[in-house]
Length: 467
Image (cartoon, rainbow, N blue to C red):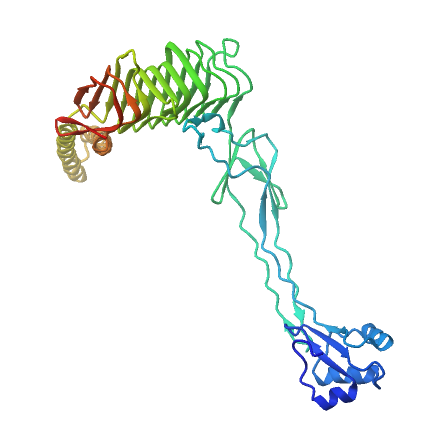
């Protein structure tokens, strides 16, 4: 029987020797196969055949002795094996915290949103190890059966992680938190940010909470408390009563808020929670919930009330773009005001801002001209009154430049507002009840009859209800 990769020995030589030499597919191993157990062959004859086939390394003398002793026919005896190359492995980072945190709320089977899954971010303590760097492993070249070098691939080292809030051990292999906080890895940056964690309720016993970064309250927020995050977000795991919450970024209530007419939320980012009742909400992004009842809501972008019973009842809700709910109003025809888009004449506002900007730019040109004239005079004669006048003009120049930049910012905000207003609409998945007042970009309509599964838009000065 002839195996794969059989040597190029002539047939007479094989028959005469009573054996053959075969190679593995990758020519990394050589085998001797006996065809005649009583054949006249020796260790020297087998070694000579291997030498004739240029097998010069990796010989296994013990295996040759074994085959001569056993003389089992048609068995493959591995008599030579090359030293295969061992590739090095690239260096890699082992993260000791979960780097793949999905903070998006989960959509449940009934279409409602589970906000309890939001905000579960890795919390770390000072000097806690965050990352282990495993250096690249060494490669080892191999040698084939003919004594030729087989070059192995070398492993590559990785650059140190960038970021803040951590320190690295002297050997460069360990990354540790500088302080208590939150750990995150985004792209190639490791960041540890200090977070204020209240492991219980925020109440009169804790007093008002004012912190520069994120605030995470694992309990409830009781009536009368004011929670403020100057630069971060607020996450509350429990229930929220009639208190005030202020955050530069998002505010996330994993349950809901019963404000009793005194609750207030102001967020630079989005606001989300299971329900809001008798709460005043101002959001610099979206407002998302499963129910909003008797609230005053202002959202820069969208208001979304989801779920099979996702309902808006009572109050006044104003979204810069879209409002979407399963049900709006109720059978008692409670007055519910829905505003989408903008009631302002945004085009006239934009034109007015542009005029103000042009006027400021003209005034700036005059100041710059005056500074130039003064500098020309001061080259000839330096007078103290001219120096004083130049200082006043430079101060005026800086003020005008700041005012112009503010007008540019306001103009961009109006243009963004116009873009949102163009997309303004109200969507109802199930039912909208009488008692609901619709206002889209200043065009108003009172709902007189129950309507089902509609989208409401404004076209010119007319409200259109699209089925």
